[in-house]
Image 1 (tube, rainbow, N blue to C red):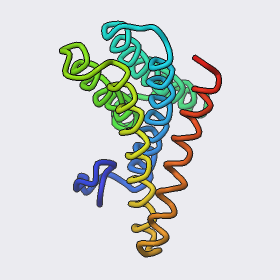
Image 2 (tube, rainbow, N blue to C red):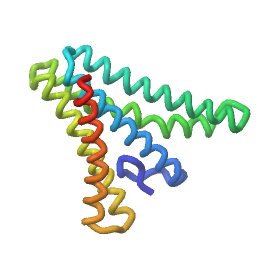
Image 3 (cartoon, helix red, strand yellow):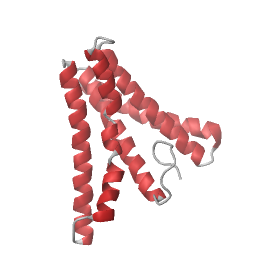
Image 4 (cartoon, rainbow, N blue to C red):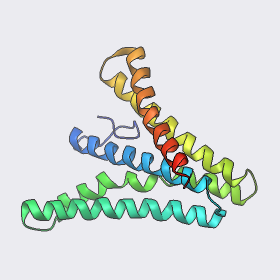
Length: 172
């Protein structure tokens, strides 16, 4: 079985868990595209930008975790513990990783390797490219062939571009 990074997943991890984990990663990537585009349009320094990126990822993760726990509590009439809690943490952990790329690029801007605007634009671009690659992988895994995979990738990337355009049009 393949996990959301394309690596071999532990044999006891079911496909539904992996799908939920990838869903969280994709959702966080789309959100992070909007955040870095918004930052690129504003007057923020490297420290403010990295703080925003990191707190956004942390906030998304906490929101997902609280929502999972609340849903579990409502349906099962008890808090998730043990295996259920570990599953929630495993599924939601990719949300935190969506901040790594933008944070590294912002750190490069802080070191004057590139401008902050270029770092934030690159972070948005990397997010869009990752959506394209996930779409392609999904198309290939469905057995649709290369053309279908590229179309799926382009459709997924278009969502990322649309988010960036909406954010840019809103001017914040």
